[in-house]
Image 1 (cartoon, helix red, strand yellow):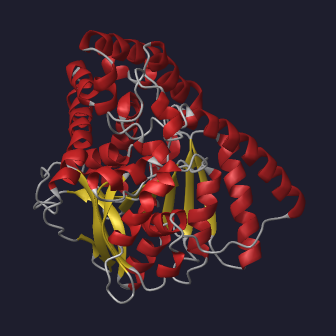
Image 2 (cartoon, one colour):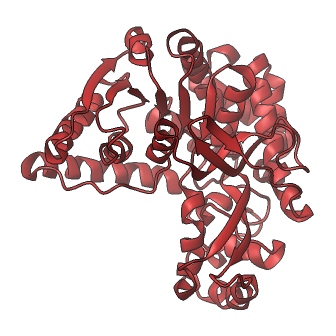
Length: 439
C-alpha cells in the first residue's frame, strides 16, 4: 500500500497524519511518498518521520519527491493521497489577501474559507489540484484523495464536479464540536455517552441534535447558559454562541472563522461589535507568524532531544484508511457533493458536510433531509460564493469573480459594487503568476 502526501512541507500535519498511520498495524508498513516543491521543508518532514519510525519500531518506508517534474512518480500507484498544500504560502499570498482588502476598508479574521481571501485562495489552488487530478487519473486512478486544504467546500466541490478523482474533504471541527460547546458552557458532565448529529457545510455545519446518554435533549440547558457566556467580557468564541441565541443552533467552526462568514459582526460603522464579541481581526497573519516561530523552536528541540511518543490524533485520515483497508466500518463527518439532495433544501451542486459511513467499499454519505429553514438560509449565503468561485475557476471568466465577491455576505455588506470590482482587479494583478488565467 502507498500513501502519498501532497504538501509535505506542512511538517506538523505530516507528523500527525503519518504518525497516526504508524499507530495502525494495517497501515504501518505502507510506502509513504512525501511531495512538496520546497526541498528544505520536505527534508524536515523526512527527518521527523525517520525519528518517529525508530521510536515506533515499524517498517514504514519514507520516500521524498521534490518539484513538479517528480510529482507523477510521487502519485504513481498510490492507494490514498492526502492533500495539504498552500499555494502561494503566507508570503506573498496571505499577506496580499489581507493587506489589499484592508486598503478598501474590508477587515478579515482568517480569510481562508470565505470572503475575498477565501475566493482568492480557491482560485490559485484549484488549478494546482486540477493538475493533481489529471495525473492521478493516469497513475493512481483508484486512489482516494483526502483533502484537508481550504477553502474546503470550493476545492472539494470543484474536484467532485470537474475531475474523476474520488475525493472527500476533511476538517477536524466536526469531531470536536460537542467538546467545544460543553467545555465553554461548563457542561462536561453530560459528555459521556452523548449523541449528536452534525450537518451543513464546512466550517458552518450545524449541531442539529445533542442528547445525553439517556436520550434527553440538551439544547434547552445549552440555551439557558448562552446569555451569561456572551455577557462575560473575558470569554472568547462568542459569535457561534450568538448563533444559538439568534438561529437556535451551534456550529462547527470557531468564532474567529464565523465572524467573517456573514454580514453581522465585522462592520466598520459598528466598531463596538469587535470588542463586544472579542473578534480577532487579522488573526490568520498573526497565527502564521507565531506558527513559523514555534515550529523553528520545536524542530531545534527535536534535533537535540529526539521525538516525543506520538499518540493517535483525532484527524480522520488514518481512520478512513483503516476502515477501507480492513473493511472496518467507521463514521466520519465528510465534505461531499450534495448528490440526490443529501440535504434537501440545498442545490445538488453544493458541497455539503454530512455524516458518512466508511468501509471496504469506500465512503458513503448519509441523507440528512431538510435543514431548519434559517440554517439553510445561512448556509446558502456561503454556498452562493462557493458555486460562483468554482464557476470562475472552470470558465476563467473574471465576471464570476466579481459576482462571487459581490454576493459574499461580508464583502457585499461593507463595499459598493464598483469598489468590489476595483479591489478584485487589484488582487488579481498582485497575485500575478498565481492567477495566470485571469491576468
